[in-house]
Length: 396
Ligand SMILES: Cc1ncc(COP(=O)(O)O)c(C=O)c1O
Image (cartoon, rainbow, N blue to C red; front, top):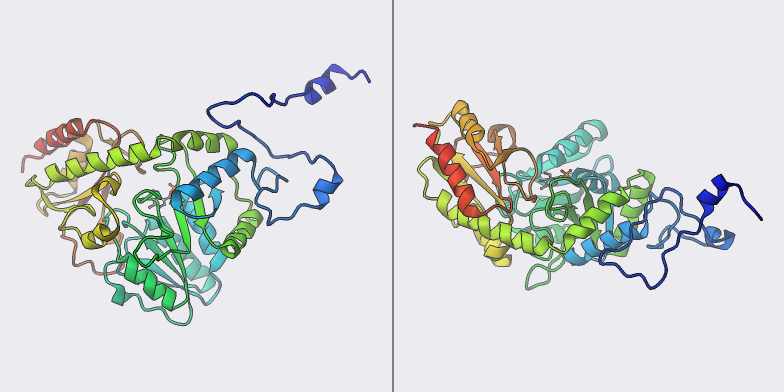
């Protein structure tokens, strides 16, 4: 039957021939996914991992990326979310109900704490804060449902006593969620990280950082090994309408091939910087898991090596450097750009007020203003030079 041009344009054959093979997988963008017939429509089941039924559920592009993230992290199932924070929120929304108790490390990623405090006010969920380097501060009651771990913790980079925290959580029979953004699935295997084969239940990863690697894409993931847990998360993911752009998924997929090389290079550059920073008289404390004087160093050493320490290092300035001095320092940097996030090619700097960020008293941290450096892919010698020049502006 002869069709009108407009109809022909819409229905023109568009399948690529079978013999075409490309380095990157083809990109599928979809809201609507066309069923071949009613049998396929009526016989699908939501637990089918490859149920191609609607764009929010997933396409071959998003499933390919999800499979690879699960593979990198040593898990079996993965759900993708539009940001790391939305992946965190998915876990909280899925497992916390009124009256539950949730345990959070004092050095957890700030917006996770903020989200939990919001749930506490609105739904009567009790938020309890523990010191990640002192397992005795984690005292779950019968109401405890979930513990959040982060290794190493945001900004102050204490590596937690992962082994004992996980053991204690397992004894208490509560769910264990790890923000695995720092380790990225490369520093250690969250699903098998000790001689006793300890494992977390849920690993959340801000793919915005190392997997994206470009400083230009936002995405998050939730990886599990247990199918029942995955199905619970999968259901919540579906009813909340969480989905990601296929174009973004393709970009992250493209970056995965270089992720380990970048991670290791950024780890090595950061350790080089760490050695230099330790010798500078302006700082009272240098925070990095590979630094023997950093809290949690021996926990880090139990499961990681120097090439696996990510690209973050924080410094605490001596108390004589006030906020104006620290602002001058940050504004004098040239290669380090002032901005949030990490894992991209450009080195970043950010200043923090620790007093506003912590619930517990942190006796292992010196008094002073804190600056965090996120090391990019520039040559470390140039980065050192940049910091040296900015320090010279301080004249104290
Ligand atoms: C440790 C950690 N977890 C989660 C996130 C959230 O990721 P996103 O920026 O994609 O929401 C961040 C972002 O900085 C982070 O540092």
